Length: 166
Image (tube, rainbow, N blue to C red; front, side, top):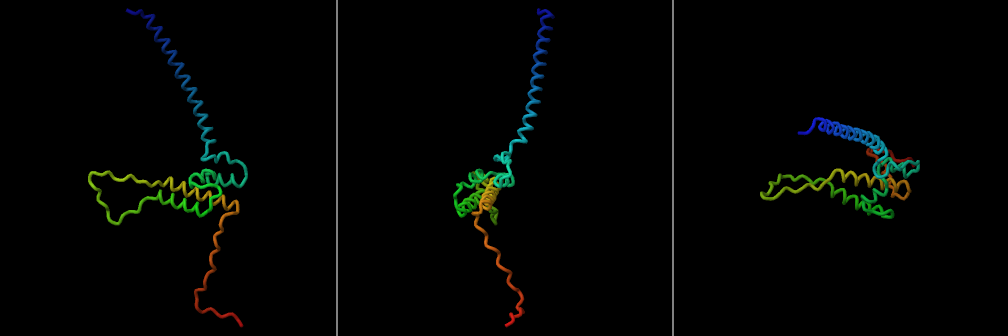
């Protein structure tokens, strides 16, 4: 039979080890809380946190929450790509991530086959849209954006206009 003194020794040393482990775990948890708060403040989408200067490009990055590099990656274009190609890529990606049109008549599922997995994504669609917005803002900033034609002047609607004096 084991002596009670040995059992008490084992119990005390085990308690000390467990106490130290809890103490260290508490210290590590406090460090994690501090670092996660700092990381949450510092980490921003796509390097937006690094856009701290007052340059127009950094202002666009903060405003659109996306760098021009990220917009180029999303739209699969390069810096010197013409706007027509950018719009073509945008339309393709936007339509590819759109939900399918609802059929007029409900289609009965064929037995033995699984239903098709939806392939649309509102998140990706919004990223594509934001990338196009960022691209257009960058072009507008650089001055090489194609200007939209001014709206036509309003047409007179009344037929009782007076002729100009002769």
